[in-house]
Image 1 (cartoon, helix red, strand yellow):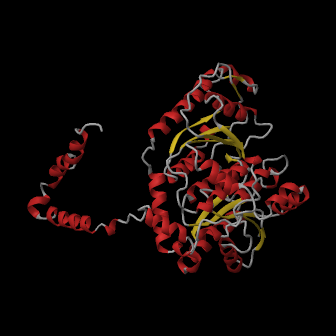
Image 2 (tube, helix red, strand yellow):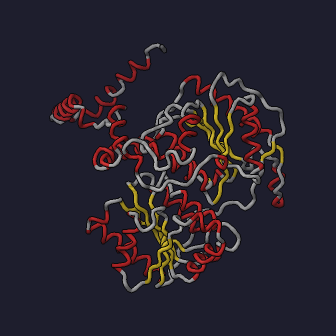
Image 3 (cartoon, one colour):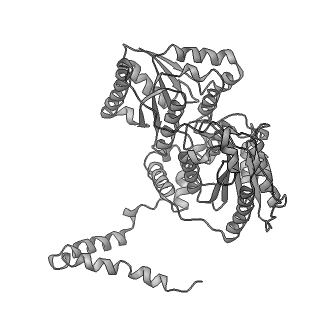
Length: 477
């Protein structure tokens, strides 16, 4: 069989992911592997139609496609996303239609599920037959049981293609009709009360709806918000995964472009930050991925603590819960507050007649006008109160992964994280609370005594609420 490997690492051959593919090449010499470094070459593929067509031609001639990639910030790298965004152009999708596909990632399992869900959906939209996924830990390849598991995954991929097995799509197709927001009521102005507000967008000339929504927000704040377009920033390229930032938050791009200065002098001092983008292929654009990846010069240390965030999105957001989860997790890891998402979708804010006959014209959206005005007010109100909602599993579990991995192995590389985690008390390992451990051990012994064990269930029902009941009766300070 001919297998095309679409390598999603900007580092090409010098990447952890590439070593996993190399093992498969050695383990299955009967199959021909061709590795294409599409992430590393994404800029060239975008600018040179002949180079992109060469890649598509190799995909057309393959029996299977292995999407191999490292995780960057909660997803694939911006360079890989840049390549994937190219596939929605006319003619590119046909090269993938009907091909067998599988995904292979390397990471510390920090939201690897989101990345694989996204990649599976991409395969579904391209008309591919998705066989399965393998999410490897970065060091798994050094252990034989994990190498065997990798080989079994690959063998199933090859067998499925050889036997022409069927694999129906699992992700729902996105609606073809895109709605467009058009304001129709006067703006209800909001006093920004001295808050520093930044609207960051990737809107292009064709993104009328997105520009209309961000303009409405800006007008609601009486023009006191600063609007910045990612395309206007001096960004020389995406994160290269070089890890130079690990020692002291110093990026390889330091002094070479304007991104770090913008992040430190515009975003960090802001009180309210609105991210505005259009959905392209089930995620925000590669330009947004570039922004998040480049923010990794702060490594795993929260850098925008206590901010108020909102996402304004053009596209079928309600069809993409994994997109919302990605950015909910990011905000929680920043120890900040997410005031909400708003999109320019249809019901209930659009005229129902717009859904009849595939009408794609913009119609007034009075309810969305109100929602944007109210979002502007809510962001200021939350900022004044310094409100940050409690973290959910997304933030709690994510931080525990970082805490454990930085402490165990990664502190050798990420020295700055290690120092910050110690200073901020993020190394909150339960086994370090010696007094609490002794108390819990004593309680475990006592409640195991025969005379108490039988009465314990009824006792705990009332005793467990005693401290909370006392706290509930306290006055508000």
